Image (cartoon, rainbow, N blue to C red):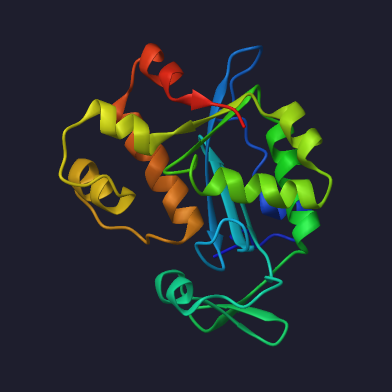
Length: 214
């Protein structure tokens, strides 16, 4: 779910923890695992419905009421639907924030982290183009790029590291972590990806080969 804190925190505090665990001080890059859930798979048209990130024990998560209908296929895998001006997760309402506010909050979260590297699975072909398009739409792309160090795609990384029959995140989690998880919930996806990465422990040279900017 989006909000896991029960104290009377402010909206900003509730969206992400301020604990220092996992944050690298100084000029060293810091890995931040991120994921989007969207209204569909068309990177030129889809809208963001959920944006999550994790850095150590620090979690960022927002739900956003989309500006276009959610495809049936997307709803089937994420459990996200709409009813009027309400976003539902498995038929239960979730608290949402406006899209521009969600993007600003995400940038604020990244500003608390030293030289963040956004790490995602298949992010080069999907999450990054979608995120950049919508940041540009709200004139926030330049501010975002000023904060970000670069991206890293774990799909390409895993294909170079391992010879496996499949490279979906769901399969990789089952193969390396020997467990199932709530796939296609962005928060659960980023938790699992961070855990996978800790098991893989890729070399710096390998990481650098799969870093990119847009």
